[in-house]
Length: 134
Image 1 (spheres, rainbow, N blue to C red):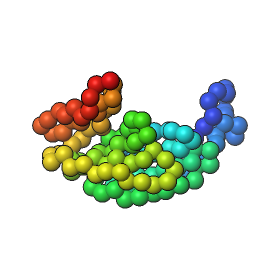
Image 2 (image 1 turned 120 degrees about the vertical axis):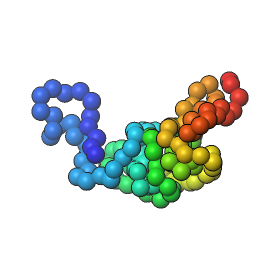
Image 3 (image 1 turned 135 degrees about the vertical axis):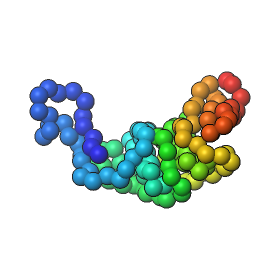
């Protein structure tokens, strides 16, 4: 895993690489960058907050299950789902805070999808809409 500055031409290894982590756990899906922090999750059930400027881990916590998909941000919250049908809601801050753990009751392999103030959740057999449209 690495962070690079945008721009440049040719070999930018020395001029644009901010940091590099030699070995990184298996990741499923993409992370989210918000307010100078990168939020990522890995398949074995761990979520992590990384300082974008330095590459240093700010916090690393086991959520549980087999995390699947990416980390999604809506407002000040992060949403991470696992294959066991749980959705974890975390504060999008450099201080770890688990706000909620929601049991969907069935297998899941999809990201939560935010739009117009609502969250859409697709499980193995159902599609849920949570919230009121703005």
